Image 1 (cartoon, rainbow, N blue to C red):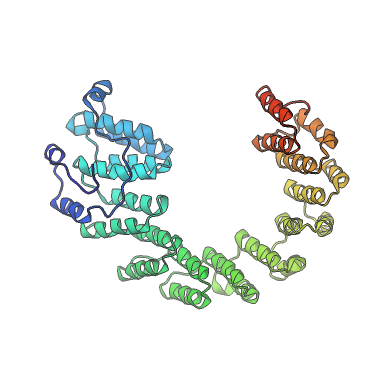
Image 2: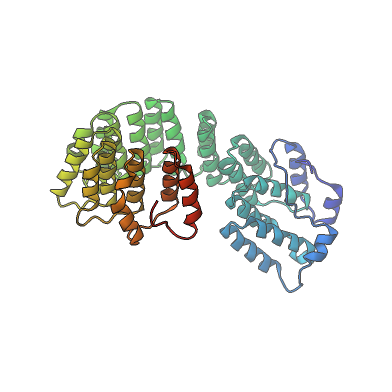
Length: 440
């Protein structure tokens, strides 16, 4: 059925639909994109005989079931329930709430296009949409299908039918426009929210601020934060984290530290994301050696994650001596290294060709390796042609101390193929189903 049409037969036999809805549909026409609907809820005569429901179920029963299927994301089951409802007595015919749950189930199942098409099916069967269905359709277009123009058409449609969009609808659409790089449209919607006296939250401003920084416009970012305060919406840690990340993008490191220093006066408290953003920003900007000192100056809690972040940066740069020094410093402090710390060190040592040192760290007292450790060692030793030295690792694997995962198997197969041992790779794959091979 073409989008925006209303079959006379369906309209005549279904519940009456308001003239406003019909008029809006004709006006909307083909504005909203529709995917091919593979699963119509209209059953054929044969299907009707096959799934004829009992008369003991009420509309409430069906809607409760659909709500549960929506939570589980079971789209196929939701469509089946709709078909049963349409074949039952008029008292159990699907309502707007029924369709809303089915659409939600489809969207959660990754079938957003089918969810949008089900809205057409609802209209074709004479069911008038309510605010919840419209909001869901808007969300499907904006957040799932990434079609902000179509979502905006739904918002206008709601207004014309006397169903004013909620602040959540506006925020959803603002995020969609920002993600599409259409900042002007997002700002226009923000002005509409102000005109309608809708409550503004940091969640509404966050995507706009990020889009502003994507344009490297620090002045506009400052003006936006000022407008938040004047609107009675105090910027929170999420807003300031976006602000700090944006400042790093434009290279204003002094401003970052100033913002963090003034956090108490500005009414927000840095969190783990703030610390991570600050540390990564310093590392990427060439201030790796100063990170720990500057964190302490700012009052940040320097913990194992702080060390891991800096060590990982040096590891990616191939500076194994810096990584080793940081690891040594960590051991002198009342901070306990975790498995990630050891994995970073082992990876860095292997890349630097220090395989004996890596084996020593692996076997060190107090370190319990995990699957990631296993995968790192397999990859690095095979890459360097030292697979014959992996006996220490196979001993732990075969003893059940480390449980290989899919990545482990993939790494081994890849290494065997690249070393020219294709037959061994094939034999290895055949043996996986019977358990982990004892030797390669």
